[in-house]
Image 1: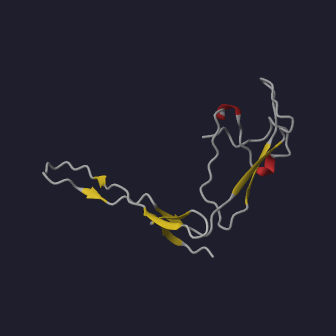
Image 2 (image 1 turned 120 degrees about the vertical axis):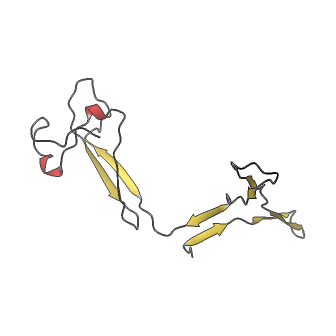
Image 3 (image 1 turned 60 degrees about the horizontal axis):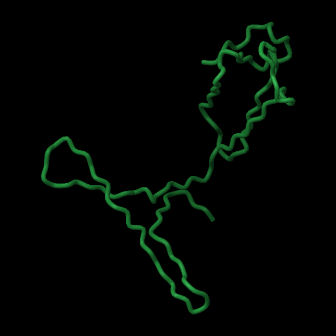
Length: 130
């Protein structure tokens, strides 16, 4: 099974040919990264490249979004449309600090669930997006 921690790729093992073929191993050797230093020195400073190292985590949020109310997919200029964005978490860990972004934030008004049944232009509304 999968265990939480770090995984590091050490190289690639492969086989050439069929039965009785040659087994090979190619180590993953990456050039060292040069460290930028403000001090003038004759020595070249380098550090190990850790790009083939990755963190493995067990639980993650898995969000799915559904926009209900725009089933036909078209909205005309100036048309007032009511739609509900439903966000569900099917993951094994709670999602935190969610944000909603839109390229047309001036045309969207957020409303609390308690006001969803009132007519679109009534009620306090949640104001525009920030």
